[in-house]
Image 1: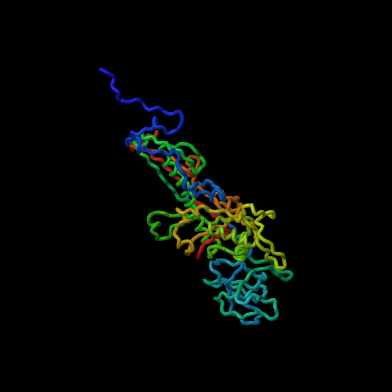
Image 2: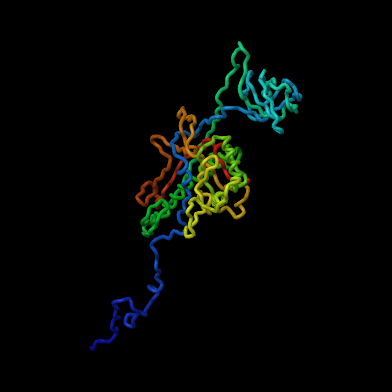
Length: 480
């Protein structure tokens, strides 16, 4: 039987990538025509997606073995009362004053001390010596003074129960041969406390899915690169949990008495925002845009701890506002009589071919202020994307001023004074149980043999709280 001519001769491959009639394939079928080209490397379209960094920059982590963290902060060294009333007549040589300030349970004013008395409405003042101190039964403290001025009381009192005068102590005076000061003053400490909360998360993958191996090349947010198998989602769960460990410390609030959360058994905790709003300084205009605005902030800090170096963590709007303010000041001298020059922006040899840097890393105005963008306030999935109307809505936070360094407090657990960062995290830990960041595997897949569940579960847990020491040195920037 003669040899058949079918199939015909084979295609002749070309030595180079040139389309010829002899190497052109026409018989496509669905198996190769629709076979997709795949990229094994994952494209990072959102860049670094984590928002945790704030507490790493400004705080520290320390162990604790208690359900409650307590610390004492110093009170003022000198005492001033701003709600003092009197019923004395104008030009009176002596007068009785009553302390009406809220929360006063004892008085620092003692017989023989000299006091400065100022009228709140007009600024007029007297100087006097205290001749008697008394506390009526069930009533506020009262003290009697004799004025040094021969003209007596400058403005008549409107009633003992009013808030007409401000009084502070500036010294004392005693006659020869008299006894010493009556009584003593105890150091005024303010006790604060916070409690840790338990955070949990979990990632699960079935045993069947683990048998389908698929590799994806990734570059992770923590800097690692390489190939991940089915645990890619576990890795993202871990990163998400680490973010929550920080954002919970920022946003946490204590559960109010009778609230739904309290009824459900949640106690809450004092986060950074709550602590600063409760006992710190709040800039209610949203964004300080002028040097005068910052001057008012500096004047407030003068009355608090006067910390030399501070870091302003801000959203994009506040960052641009600071840059714009400093650029405007840099464009011309604000000193009367001084010559005005064009923008220098740091270097005096600026050239038309140079890229002009319109951003500033900080400035000094009374104190040093360093500026840092806070990703948490810019991230669209967190506070950076609440809504368009929320950008200037009441309560919208635009930044936080944090004092740098550490402060000395009395640690109730240690029983002694200790240096602590203004912001730091306390986590539950003992010699046998460390709850700073626990992770463990359960199930019957992936090497785990703890139950009959046909899956592998990766569990995450942390128990922690944040301690905001010296909240009076912080400034929260928000609207309203």
